[in-house]
Length: 207
Ligand SMILES: C[S@@+](CC[C@H](N)C(=O)[O-])C[C@H]1O[C@@H](n2cnc3c(N)ncnc32)[C@H](O)[C@@H]1O
Image 1: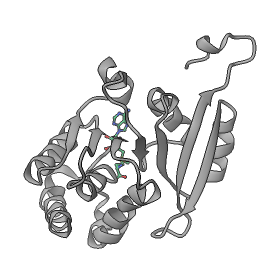
Image 2: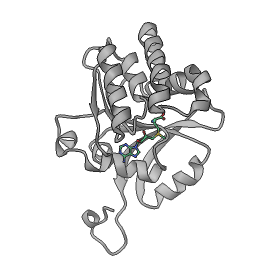
Image 3: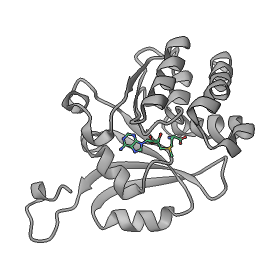
Image 4: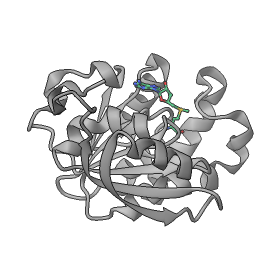
């Protein structure tokens, strides 16, 4: 596992000048800011083996999760990344490190129906630095409603994001303090339901 993580870090460093994979200012601290931070998703929900990672970028947390689960029977991580150059990078790493991944280079909103079908019974949906909680619940709704747990990295605006999301959704949420960034946390979200809009039947409430 350590060797795979080290090779992954090497590949991020190698491709960074061409693909602008992470904020350049964070590269010197990549092990803490990205690898250790990314590892907090699986640490927060260690029993999950089938993961969906949305807006994966350079693979945080999705590829870190895949590396940590690489030798676990039945584990898989599906990574969704709209940017073709970043998706190609994810594919390169996954192939070289023989990771149990599927890379989908699409926008989340236009994912093929089959990703929502029972064939893909994800246990966890992760995302870091992708969107507000309200928007994340919208993106992840098909899988959360089917029973997956949302495992989201959240920053200092989390309290207001939570209030905003509660206007449109009911959910149970557990907060874990980040071990990496003092003002950040990992939140676990379960039992997600979209609240009906007053005057509309529940099934018409989709935005
Ligand atoms: C700020 S980056 C974060 C990347 C990574 N999760 C991280 O924390 O380092 C957001 C990523 O999400 C991707 N993205 C944004 N909106 C998306 C969408 N609707 N569908 C798929 N990917 C999206 C962007 O291309 C970008 O790579």
